[in-house]
Image (tube, rainbow, N blue to C red):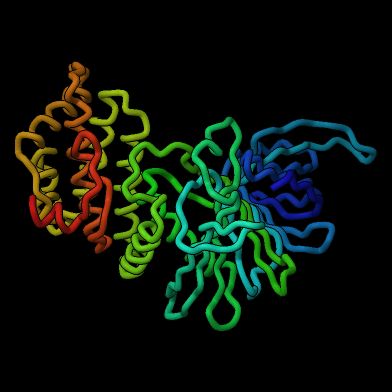
Length: 400
């Protein structure tokens, strides 16, 4: 997407202080560089403006409504205009949307740097390529057709190795009968993004979205969110036709049955595993994964009294987690992991060549907890072995 510049007038509000500023503004958007900048102005006053959190509601010069949220005040200046002195204000926003949240024929979401395989062949120029995947999913008792489409033909990992990002996948959402709201489409795609993050081994998010009525764009949205360029610990073979779509459908349907606190706990666990694997510079992975296990065990073992949880050591927490989910484990591996983590925390750590395998075997058991909660029994990458093996969850749990 090219740079997007528009002008308008809106009201800027700070949620903490109640300060409200009415101002003309210039909105500058460039999704792939994640530059969402809003330049505004206000009269000179002695009130100190807080840096965060700000929001803005207004209208563009074209009459379209615009909304920005999770904004931070990043620059302030003063200048003289013909009718007096003013402050120039520069904001950076996490979320921006333009247009009414009305019912639309289709919503399209663009994902950067996502390299996946597709299920269905279609004609592209003079050749036939596998660039589409179609799923029928249910949300709030309504059926939706979700299509994944390659934006770059046959995707290649080399596409995303450069210094700049590129949109590689478009996900479209249509209601099977009638029109859908962008708000609902966003919720569906956010759940799919979480499922894709689990499979991909790193954060997967859309950056730009559009809503269309009769092929006319009536709604746009941008968000400044993290996404992985080079995931290091892929859990599902996302390049294999039907393998990713099978996992996505099973995991999505499982997540629909989760309570909000269950989803939140699972998200923290997944994000923690990804964080510990992001930079394998030991002893950091030991410290991060230890903290993740303590947090997740607090939720899973919440039926135990608070006093009893507080008394549990990291070792007993790990064992209790694995036993709760019936994940096979070896006491010696848990004991050595805990010792490495404690050495990392207390500054007495010394690197050994086996440290990666010590860490990854515990992390792999956490992977199994995630997959088991999602009721997925199909093929996955087992990182507890060297080299990594492709196995089925069902066989691992049955034979171990």
